[in-house]
Length: 467
Image 1 (cartoon, rainbow, N blue to C red):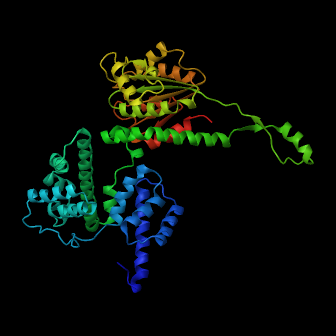
Image 2: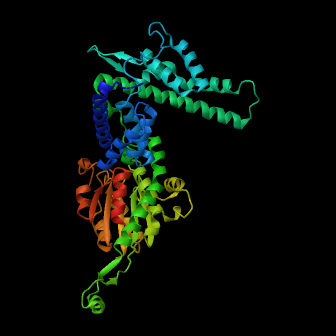
Image 3: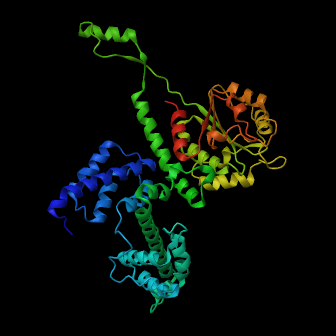
């Protein structure tokens, strides 16, 4: 396909306008795209055939994406702003007649397509399926498109056993071959479901506009998912992000230490050294800066309402434990117990957190959060845990079920600590509502910080760790 010479200028202007809209959508979705990266993406247009959609996708991804976790968001928005086709699939030569096509008949077509495994054929059949089964007419007379209607009608997951049997037909299958066949089938079904989602977004973008569709189609980046609202798949992905996040933070801290390793100006040595250059201080000398590695004590609420938040905070702290001279961790629900022993080096930290919930002495009365009782017992049982070298980190939503807040006990702990911080996983507008005692506790610690996701947690840890 070529662009007529007379339309080239208009076409190029439209492409650049669409690129700027696309970049704005990426920024709104949480991707940090700089002006320089936008310029690089524009320059890439001159190095590729922009009519080759896959080349365009990869060129933009190479210039605009910084981390693998951003690719899903990028691909979703790319499909909205740079769709594969326009209209109702009219370019598909073998598109079936929408009238009178039964789901069972189309399932046979889908089965054969998945068995063949050609990505283009899977995408084409997905577009046909959306055209046939994905439309719902609204009262306003406009069409609405839904991926779940397609998947409910065709139930591709129920084809797994038949497809595995087809792939293994005519051969003696052992356990390994069957496993490979199952993985192949599951991957092809996933491709079909993603193609259905992409085609639904394309049609919605044509009906509602690309900006409105982009806002509704995008899920938060994994580092922006709220701890308290994360799904099981989100939790799995968040766990995978902990160690890369720890490495990035450690590298950043090392760089900061190198820049700020000099201490205060040593005036005497500087003046003495300047005598060799006629009294001109060409080089300043500094007093050595004594490194400071504080102790860290983590006191966390692991009750059901905030357990996932405590889980990831403890994972990150454990991964960064070499940045502190000593790390001790304590957990509580309505009583308190030390859990440092569960986080030994080399142990899987997800398993360690499971052991904490099963084995630690955390329930005293009814298993509901009791901050006051827990703070009091912590001070009685572990009087040596906090010293003037200690940074105290408290994790929890400060909801104590209207029980005594333990003001004196917490005041005693924070007065002995070098620093005290409270990470609260609830949105700030929910603080001091209902049984929340955030107003009371915020006055007793150095700082109470909203910490709802990995992004905010990383920002806080960077601030907490010493230079």
